[in-house]
Amino acid sequence: MAAAAISGGHLVLSTPTSTRRPQLLPIHPPSARPIAASSASAARRGVAAAAVSSPAAVPSTGKDGKQVPKDFLHINDFDKDTIMKILNRAIEVKAMIKSGDRSFQPFKGKSMAMVFAKPSMRTRVSFETGFFLLGGHAVYLGPDDIQMGKREETRDVARVLSGYNDIIMARVFAHQDILDLAKYAPVPVINGLTDYNHPCQIMADALTMIEHIGRIENTKVVYVGDGNNIVHSWLLLAAVIPFHFVCACPKGFEPDAKTVEIARSAGSKIEITNDPKEAVKGADVVYTDVWASMGQKEEAEYRKQVFQGFMVDEALIFC
Image 1 (spheres, helix red, strand yellow):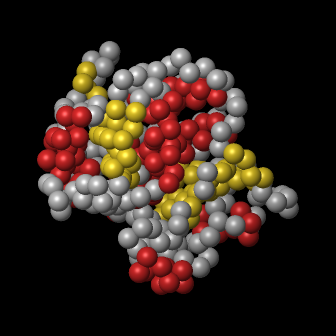
Image 2 (cartoon, rainbow, N blue to C red; image 1 turned 60 degrees about the vertical axis):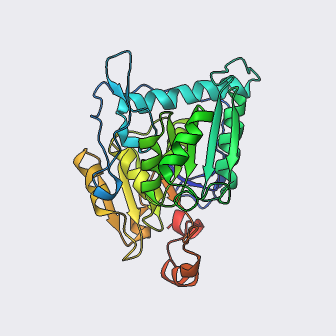
Image 3 (cartoon, one colour; image 1 turned 135 degrees about the vertical axis):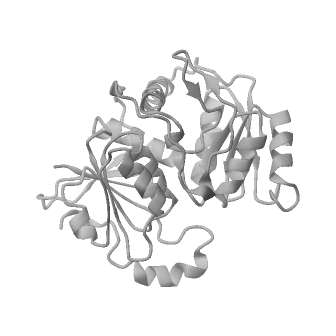
């Protein structure tokens, strides 16, 4: 079975039994067709852990009468049908933009405040460029521009930004900050990353799976590395769309147990292991992340030692 390793904006496709070097492919192939969601939609689920319980967001009502949250905070705040509609629409819009057709301007005359307590080149460029291509204007607010919770309370920041902008995207440290922003902001809030999860990243990776594999459901996705916010979002995707997810990490670096249980209780096969070589066998996707994220630099040397053997390279792909 073909294995794919997603890392740093590229997808590595390989055949485990082959001696060929992996083939690096850009994650933007020219032709990908939307795929339909199964008729059995998963029920809306919130994050179980008390520390990440969702705020009382103001929902809207869709055409089918379902309540749709105003914010994008966790993937499993939405059902399977909604997630697949978002991904399929993304494929259509992406193809339209790549063809040179810029007529789709849903955010014309709209502005988005981008709060970056945690700086990121990729997150800023992708959000700012994407919003511009869809007709909107993005306002960048760096770590020293707001200082939520220090210079101003989060609720005041939410109210002020909502008065000037139509959407707020925030990349923060504490998950409670994104929950509070969503609670007090009357406009939609998008989670650009927290220490708990990274939903937009995993939605982009799910799109990559559709483009290269043709599906998400009934695949085997193997993550090698720290059981961090990336893993939590993969687990929350598995709580909505059933697939086999394996996290191979050193002992003591496992993902949040309650989030693992959310995915398992939804019907996905979830495995947490300390053996990366065994984990990648039969994988459709092999995924990794940095060993020390922002805010963990003081642990970098220790993590470098602990994570030896948890690296996605040719030795692991062809083991």
